[in-house]
Length: 482
Image (cartoon, rainbow, N blue to C red; front, side, top):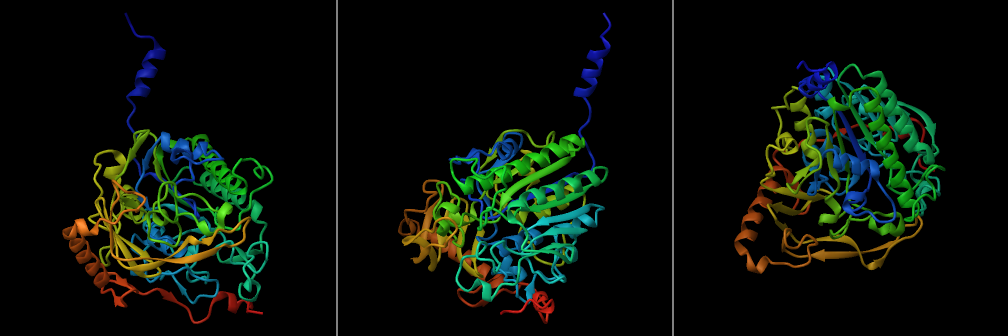
């Protein structure tokens, strides 16, 4: 008996080869979103169905690490595949900083544009607000967004901290290198960013592209559009994350509508853990200790989800340690390019992990930096803290409704934790495992010599300088302190 035409067509579709060309990349970076702030990690009081869909249709890493526990350093590390102190961006940059990511650094965007990719950056940049440092000088064809954090504003509603109006210039919304608005309506930022990305996808559906979307939220101040305000039990924080989730859904819908879903790798993550001192306007680190601006797990461990229909098996999870520094070598390899050979990179090509061909972390160790200080190291399930201080709410007081709380200064001595048995870092076992302590201290000494360490004033032999300008752009434009 001959087969029917519909059955033949079905069999042909099932045996069709996978898309073999260079993939598109969509990198979505939330700001201050904690590990516990998505549904698949137990978020309470709000839902994230679209982010959860990324996880159910792709790969979720439960030990995905932001390279740093603060804004600028993490973004520098993601863009360059190197620890932030290695590329001269150990601290958060202010609007009047003369420092920025060096034009001599090679970014993800530059590598992909060299492979024929269209590139765009939308949202928060925070790697220097001078035109020499903005995305269009770092490999992106176009840029639309805020050059730094949304609280770096003189407007009290955006920054209630005393004296802010005496220091910060009016918050600029920039297109490429032109300020198009001052103090934009922040309730509309997530929508406008989403529209910008969707428009880019529509214009570039026939060629490979790299779209980098860095939300300004849920960094404080929290702002949600009217459609989302009051929509969750969690309050304004939940409303904001719910709108971000809507944005993710709009991007997925656009990829499907344009017929490029199966040739696009989407990555969702966050730049650091939750800013706990803001209380009900802060997120959750889930089971992990502390949050943003600390080198405990709550500061570094963040959501990390990869989705590429047909190439990444759906619904997989891995506890292998991977980091935001791995995006540059992984994207570059998939695009058919090569990473720079004239400098030290710290990230790894993790495609074998993402594709399911391996489940072992490529990291022999991961170094936790804060403000240029090397404060901890992880190797396997062992994590060693060297003596340092850190901000904590223990003995302090959380803020409420956007107002900054009062942090205390915590301190920790030399302490070893087994993250497999004690992910919350509660029980120091250094006395029981002196050999492990000695081995990890040797690796700390190596990192101090190679990358650097402000805690011991060590200068790394393979550290590279930042970019510098003679005068900040804000000053050049006449935005001087009052």
